[in-house]
Length: 158
Image 1 (spheres, one colour):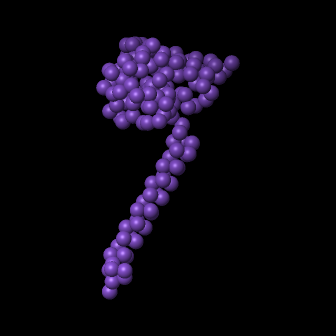
Image 2 (tube, rainbow, N blue to C red):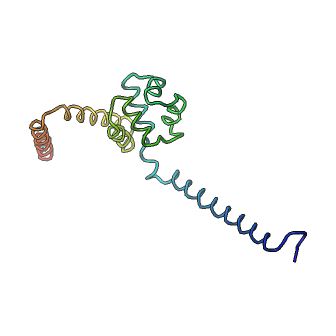
């Protein structure tokens, strides 16, 4: 039987497709809203860390983007948290910045832990300690760790 020239089965399928599309759209929009508003997901800002390291090293946006094989506009969006870099691009950016990806994550994490000034100082200190620690021989690394433990103990006693 035809309803206005359309078979009922075709109408039923069209309604099911529209209902499914609305359902999927609601799920995705809900999940994206959760990702953006959930405090745990906004905690670490890798773009801000990239910008901070770039400026500390006195590098231009264009130079870093060129070295990483991307556009300056793309890097600008990443630094302003309008876009997330792929893992591959993040590795290329860290190489272009002359640092390790783990150091970028450390800067991003320290930025998110406290006030901007305090975390900025702390992240700079962490980077300096990490760089100097990596330059040490294995024997001196063990000594440095023991020294830090002793400092922590003496601080707790005081």
